[in-house]
Image (cartoon, rainbow over the protein chains, first blue to last red):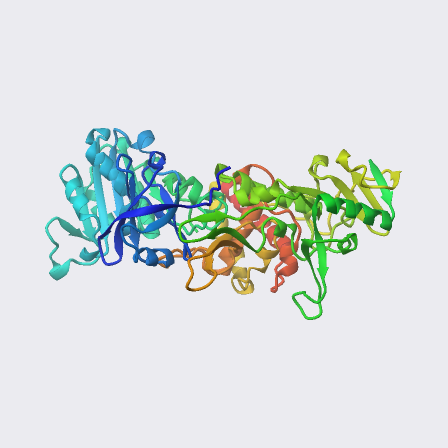
Amino acid sequence: MDNILEPKPYKILIVKKLTAIEWLFRVEFDEIEKINYGQFIQISIPKIGEAPISITEFNAEEGWIEFLIRKVGLVTNVLFELKPGDEIFMRGPYGNGFPFDENYRNKNLIVVAGGSGCGPVRSMINAVNNNFESVKNMEVILGFKNEECILFEDDISSWEKKSNIITTVDEMCKDGNCSLGLSSGLVTEHFSKLDLSDLSNVEIVIVGPPKMMEFSAKEFVKMGVPEEQIWLSFERKMSCAVGKCGHCRVDETYVCLDGPVFNYTKGKYLID
Amino acid sequence: MSLKLTKKSFSNSFDKLKEIYTIYAPKRSPKQGRFCDTDIIKYDVINSSDEIVFNEKSNYAAKEVLSPITETLFYFTDNEYRAKKIAKKPILMFVRACDINAIKRFDDIYLKNGGFVDSFYAGIRENISFALMECPSKGWDTCFCASMKSNIVNDDEYIFGIQLGEEIKVDIKDPSLTEIFDGSQITYHVPVVEENLISVKIPMISNKDVQAKVKDLDLWKEYDKRCIKCGSCTIACSTCTCYTSYDMSYTPDSNAGERRRINASCHIDGYTDMAGGHSFRPSAGERLRFKTMHKIHDHAKRFGGEHMCVGCGRCSDHCPAFISFSTLVNKLSVEVDKLNEEDING
């Protein structure tokens, strides 16, 4: 019997600095066929510990996965000292991910992501961008604290060629003037720019800080979007990621097993 | 088959059992209690039948055998994690009916939840057999096993039942044990505790909206000041399974060490802290609500069986603020009845 908690070593291939505290790590991986958009991996550093990190991109042909890592905790602090060629330990993928084939295919897909919430949705947006026929249309709102916090600028440029992409910053842009193509204000202030003319055919994905997800979802419901067509991705403390340690539980729901992606009909009750 | 044994005969039987099993039972550690000059009774390996504490409730639950407070999972070196080896020798545990039911709740989490099997737990669990110890006719003063239906165990869940009082009686369920015991035949079956000194009414939450409203009840605020978030209740609880993993290295300058897990408590600061600083349920009342609902609603809702709480009463026994869990659940039941009624009447 396989030991579900045993991590295996994998080599870091590329480390790319996106912002001062958010770096992109590309790591070799051998079980890519199991991965769905929005799932996560348990990353281990011996002597330091384990942490759940979203998979932000994966490539089966080249055998790698990518993580957007923010330097905020014990494990991530040490990760920022590692270089290409160094090994980290991983197990997974875990969680359910976004139900793209079941729910989003051929629909008007709207993605709203805040800050490092861009991490879990990036692989799905890239996949749609590379195969735009898979959806009827895609629109994306990306919210960041300020201009310096903007992530994945190369990807955003590529997405803008096919989709309505609104990149907004919470803090006023420098000198009151935003860079070309940049908006200011909270993500919810830009919902009126989205094409919600056919509410029956829209699917909305929201990922970001808890308050941003709560207010965004409530705003879409107010605009007439059925709750069944709104999806959230939750973040919780986890030790095991396999439903044993209890840290991520809310009521009868284990975020690691039943999430991190939840339909709003369930997600709206996961308040604690 | 049931037998009456002399003390000497049982001692001989115990020695034969010891050859087959590593034997765990509630054991007294003199002067090791939480207060000066008090003893503690907790599960440990025993070598003599005299060490089994039969007439008192153990201070800590039987779960410690399967889920020690700290447990090594892996040994790591530079480039590998190696899982710890699990002893192959069968284990015999002297337990009460609630303990067997509590370990079944552990099975829900560690063997079934999400379809993932925890190898460390499974490795010990498959080696375990139970000897069912008789309880006093109504249990002890804080017990409410009858309300939680954990007073009953099936005949195939233990290998023999035992009364270890002035008289020693055994009810042998596993036929292979007949040669172990030597005594005169009697009629004996471990009696079920039909009722306790206290009873608990479990709230029946009618739907998800009522469940959400339970979170806002004023009832929980009463405990904001009273509960001191010490986690004593969860360490003593028969069914609390949560843990946190952590790494330790043997010396600061070596890359060799262990990944361990330690019992965690949803009452203690840090339980929900995420990197970046966000956390959930800051107040004591919210934490008590979270634990209470898990014990008498959430677990059963997820697994479709009995409630997680087995009514052993150890949380009430240990609480330094004298919070009675049975009283709390009965108070909650009254409030939930009101919420259900409001929900029906719109």
